[in-house]
Length: 629
Ligand code: GLN
Picture 1 (cartoon, protein in one colour):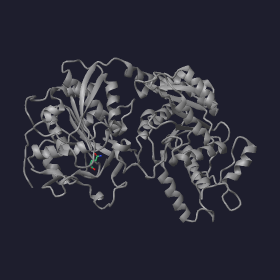
Picture 2 (cartoon, helix red, strand yellow):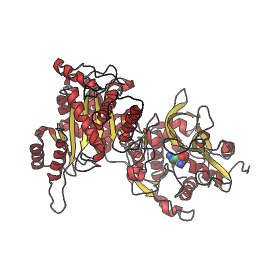
Picture 3 (tube, helix red, strand yellow):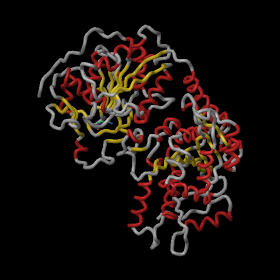
Picture 4 (cartoon, rainbow, N blue to C red):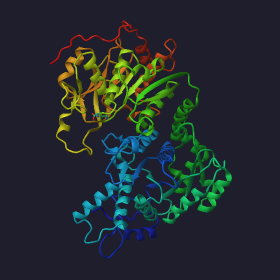
């Protein structure tokens, strides 16, 4: 059993009262466990809850606010609390829920964790993501172990107690290097009033009371509608939403109004009046050109300072740190706003091409690289289910396309079309970036069309194909079922010197770079020698096992043909764009404007892209050896 709550509250009277919460036996109703050594009042909490509707960008709001506090030198730890019963996001369909994001420790989680990592430039762990399923699984397991001393186990106080325990644990360990966090940012999934999230809000209400004054800041993120038929903003839906929150016993400290346009004064006044929140704590959070300009907007409105006042944190601020961090970020934001010097179009093969959320990290990784290279990147999403060798040139957009990405994916649909896209990009020397499945597609294309291994395929799509160049990882074959069985999370990639990959990553003496994986299939080692002999270079491998992780073509054969078994998009950050995306966008610019001086490109990359290939007209690299086994 966790230890009782230590009564270290700043206020002695309060502390004595709080001591009761830690007890759990027949004589008391209290149950509020804390981790060993926890000090009430040391850590602060900001809880962001949505009203009116979901999809308002709670994650973006919460991460931007957390960033402003991190910039001030405070240690911050975000957490997303999901209402669904799944233990993680591993089995969720990305076209229903948005992409499955993966953390270094292999956690498969909500895409909001990607937003937190990008905005905070901070790696997260499984402690930053909780689902109802995790909480219920844990409570039932504890009950079976006899952990509740003869008590009946209830939603309140036991389930809520466990939620508080998770939050306190994160407060103690979620800061940099596993140290304490000054502020925990809690994002409650869904909207207030959802049946499945009710116990989170109840837990937060209890936590605010137990932690004492100035420990919790409740933020209600609401939405101001502006119906086209009226042509004006209406506050009623927002009022009702906030009222719903107040019915749970939570008085918001801050109201943030999402809206298409800046929220007008009348609406702000009504919101303030109906919710007991002073005007200076009601903020307009209208749409911006980029989510990365939101921190600046919040700062200029003083939202961060209000949070500091509510939580009594002014004396923990480091102004020098803040000044430096703000300057770095605003340089990036200036680049976002600056007119772009280049214009390129990238084709991305996507299964359900209308659902951008399914490829959110790729979208962001392109945005990061494009911003640094001053490129206006148009993305053309391509459904490959009816693409063939005959129509691929047309479908990709002829000369209008300057780069191709085949992203990750599962299942057979559209696979042949994707292979046709890779082949086209390879033969026509269109810059290519293959990601995970796109890496495997490149291997299949090369095996079929250069090595002439007829029927080469992945056993994911054709278990009995004549040439299984992509086969299931040996350790995966033993695992039954789908939940959490893939090769997941950060793994080292050993790079070969004098390769495109090496030049992009600049790995230094140790020659390895950590990258994030999520796959079940890999290049069948038995084919590696033949593929290599035919000109496909595996420039990144597992340091100890024959697992191929990066492939590329020689500069003489192609200006930029690169693919990774890992997911580079997951670790691209605004201030640290991923080298593979930088390379792709740079190569696309060179294809679109071959004579242009590329002042903003990294010198090494520029050198690579402008090294003339030995023969630009040669259609493909001919195989040096093409043998069937
Ligand atoms: N389906 C492939 C595999 O499991 C690729 C996975 C992916 O693209 N994430 O290996």
